[in-house]
Image (cartoon, rainbow, N blue to C red; front, side):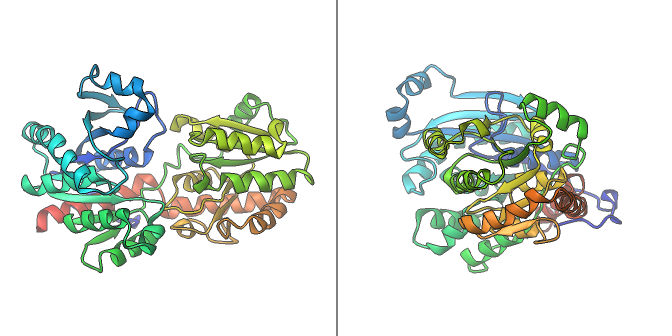
Length: 424
């Protein structure tokens, strides 16, 4: 939802919104790249006059004990309640025991989460007098929080940015489908990252839910083309001026299409010997990714950076020549918007809300997910034409400035939340 440039925030008097964002993950000093989506949303709320804090509980399950005995033993030595500040935001954190992994929808998980977090939420409500809970994604924790919100007489909103929403809809008997539907029906509003997600939410709830599309967007002042930054990061990565660099930003897992990209890169490298591949993101499938790179025989041409703080991402984007995003499923990928803002030519899978960012053939190129032949066909012409890359990049940034400017888009969301509180 984009606010027309002629509208002014001061034209819409706001009621006081005091919001608690509930999420199972949030950026921290050891993992600054985690859940930047949630942090971006909180910063927008603050920018437009809301008061906002974050509640971030983390469940400890039986699987945790079996996988990491050291962490499990440390659980009893670590304070269950703690807090920290991140980029000016107050984060209230706690750890609690659950039964199954948090992604699994079970009554036991929801009940344990409810019992564990209710005293903490009641205490936070007494101290800060929240009038709205904002739940990020769909977990048993969010279901428990929505129940507590109703008990406290508070309004409840869910932020939906899930990348695998299509798979949920195709399997209405799955635990995740049931969990998402139950949380939606318990909320006063569902905020969707894209029109595609919005449509899926309405279908999943049979129309019995109020939804709105909100493009959080990116900061075009932070993500922009910068020749000096390009030189700095290319020297850092030891790239020569003649080398053409393909970039993928995201968790290095199967769903992001990393293995297809490695295969396509290997094939193209036989024709273009100056081609390089840069992988930026948390290495969640380390063994498999390293095996795929070794099997390709291209170890010397592929660089894995790993996860980095958000303020370093523009440097790596400027160092590359072509952004390739062959993901299998998405909500509205931040990485694609950020690459477009940096005037990078983008080739991305036509999944989720990607087509809402990329105008195929004009501001980027769309490919069929998992189709390696299609991906290879779309990459090759751009390797041969720097001018084509430049034209796509410039048009991509124009679209970001018009529809996905972070500094403008938060206003519409805050007005919608205010209307929920005022009219209910």
